[in-house]
Structure formats: C-alpha cells, structure tokens
Length: 359
Image (cartoon, rainbow, N blue to C red; front, side):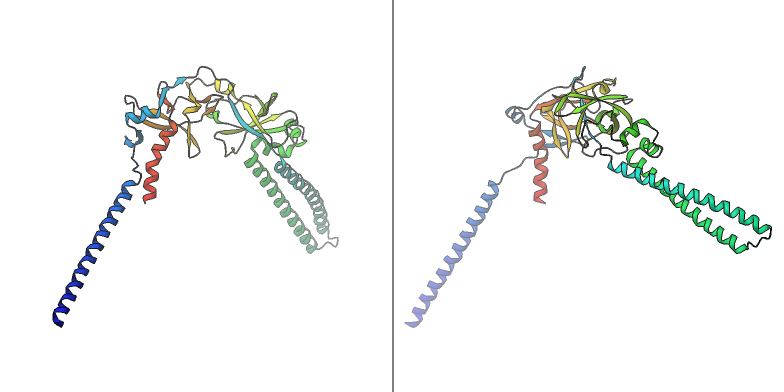
C-alpha cells in the first residue's frame, strides 16, 4: 500500500515538474516575441544618400519630393549689385601707443648712451695722446677706459636690438605702414592717429579676391545709423583678419574722431564688386543652409528630378535678399533648391547620426 502511495506521489511530482518546464518555456517564447515586437516598433531610418563619382547625393522617392514641397529654380546671373556691404570695426590703438612709447624710451636711452660713448671716446683719445708723450698716464688707465667703452658699446647694441624688435613686432601685428611710421612720426596720417584726431578702421572684405585693387576711398557707417556716412581712406593691408569673418582685412582711416573706439561698422563695397568682370550669380536667402559654420545650397542633378547635391558658397557677398557669388563651383542655370533645403540637409545627415549612435 505504501509503495503504491509513493508511486502516486512521484507521478504527481513528475507531472508538476513537466508543467513548470512547459510554463517557463512559454514565458520565454512570449518574452522573445515582445522583444521582437519592440524592435519592430523602433523607428526604421532609411538611408537616402548615394555615392556618385565620389560625391554624396541625396536621392528621395518622387512621392517624398512632391509631398515635402521641394522646389527649385535656375540660378541667374546678377547684372546689378546694390547695397553690398562688408563689416569691420574701429580699432583701439592702445597696443600701438604702448609700442610707440616703448620705442621712444629706447631712442632716448640710445641718444644718451651715444652721447656718453662719444665723450668717453674723446677722453680715450686724450689719454692715449698723453700716454705717448710720457706724461704720467699709465697703460692701465687706458685699458680701464677701453673697458668702460666696451660696456657702453655693448649696452648700445642691446638697445638697438630692442628697437629693431619693437619695429618688427609692430610690422607683424600692425603692418609695414605702422612699422615704418611708428618711429619717424613725420607721416601726417600716423601722427593724427597717434594724436587721437583720426580713427583707424579694420574692414574685412569677403570679396577681396574678386577685386583687382582696393579703392583709395570707401564709405562706412554705423549699422544703426546709415544716414551718417564717413569717407574712409585706404592706408594698407591688415596683417591679420577677423576670425569670425571670411575674407581679407584692410586698414582704412576716417579723418575725424566722431566714431567711438571699438564700434562695429558697415562698409559699402558695391563699387569693389562691380569692378569684377567675371559672371556673378544670385543665391536666394531661402536656399542657403548652414553646417560646420559655412553656407551651402542643394543643386538638383541634371536629368533627375529626385537627386540633389550639396555645394558650398565660395566667398559669398551678403545682400538684402540673398547672396552674390562668382560663377565657379556653381553655374548659371543650375537648378538650386529654394524650398526644402533644410529637409535635404536633415536627410543627408540623419542616417550618418544613426550609424554613429549604433557604434
């Protein structure tokens, strides 16, 4: 009887164990199914980029182009350019004043040493003369005087080297014009600047490569006051450019001190750009997208309505309605995207960002 009861209990335990194993397996299947469903629910990002001849194009389905309202228009030649401006600032000359004062101090020391050296050389000549005439002037006295003269000559050489360093440093930071006139003080423009009667303006012109020669005069004004126009006269190239602006910088002088130091100014460079004979293209402002701190546009590939290529604007000139560029990497009659450029930029980089996140 006991053996039968034991067999029954063992059978029940085996059946229970089988059910437990079955239930655990079912839960795992359900869990795997839930995971797969969650993975299926994740957003599927389609790569619309395509490499053609080493260039990255964006190819969108026709339906996406239509539904997104992406439109384009031919680039046109700009026959007239109006209100083309560049930017700059009124330069603070404190550093230049400091260099000028240091240079003046060095020149005073030099003159003082030269006069002292001249006197010591005169005394040495007399001592040598007396020594030759046996008038109780020993050779040691002459040697001591020659030693004093050597020290003076060495000090003079040090000062002359300091003077040259100041001038070289001035030329490096402020250009040859100021390196030349910081010491002489005879140039009228430089003197007026040092006397705080003129204002020095640093103008950065993105179109510098477009112009064959900078004009002698240019009109400048404060951004918030376009009615008060100041005539600025060219004096030299600026050794360094404003890092926040693309282009080349130049020094101009306004012959009054009405504008405050450090003021931002705008410069009318319309005439500069009109000197250029090469074709200029107009880029609508709505076509421009920005990435990596640079302006770009999307061009529709010739013969295909759904493929677009991003191209940079090279040396663009900002106008009230858009940008002016020289015909270079962008050509007349190329189809530039005017609506939907930002969407194309997002599609170009979206798949790249997805891949980076997966890595």
